[in-house]
Amino acid sequence: MSVPEIVMGIILIIASLAIIVVVLLQEGHEKDVGVVTGGADTFLSQNSARSIDTFLARWTKIIALAFFIFVIGTNIYMFMAHK
Picture 1 (cartoon, helix red, strand yellow):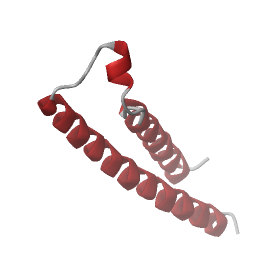
Picture 2 (tube, one colour):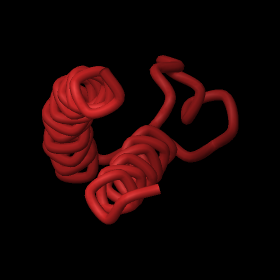
Picture 3 (tube, helix red, strand yellow):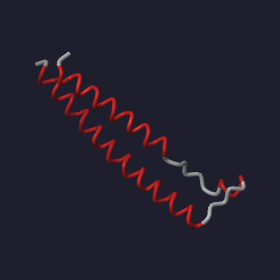
C-alpha cells in the first residue's frame, strides 16, 4: 500500500466514525412519550431540543455527502493508480 492509500483509508475511517457519532447523538422521533413516562418537556427544553436536532441533522447530511464524495474520489484514484 502506498502512502496516499493509507491516508485515504484513515480519512474514510474518521468520516465513517463521525457519521456514526452524529446519528447516535440524535433523539428519536417518538412523539408524546414524555407525557406517558412523566417527563413532560417545558417550552424552553422543547425549543433547545429542536435546535440541537436541527444542528445534528444538518451535520449528518454534510458529513454523509462528504463521505460519499470522498469514497467516489478514492475509488477513482485507486482505479487510475492500478491501471
